[in-house]
Image (cartoon, rainbow, N blue to C red; front, side):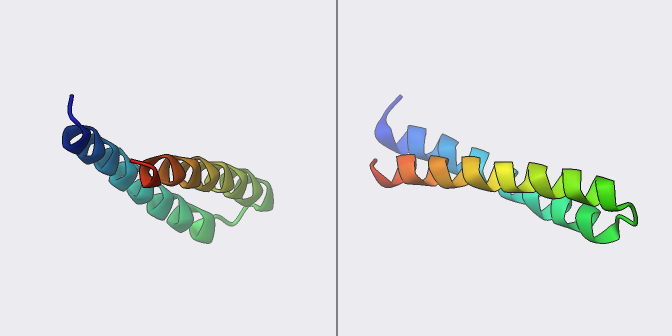
Amino acid sequence: MNNTQDMDKKMGVMQEKMLRMHEQMHKIMQSKDAEEREKLMQEHLEMMSDNMSMMQDMKGM
């Protein structure tokens, strides 16, 4: 796989992750249960951290 194909694949994965994060934020805002909101927020923060790492890796390409 060449560099352009690899970058395109990673961009597709990143777009999917961003969509999931967006959906997750809606769940957080709609949740009435504080424990569920906390759990969802923790998952969201972990996903953000993973995405930032992936973006840093892509930056070096």
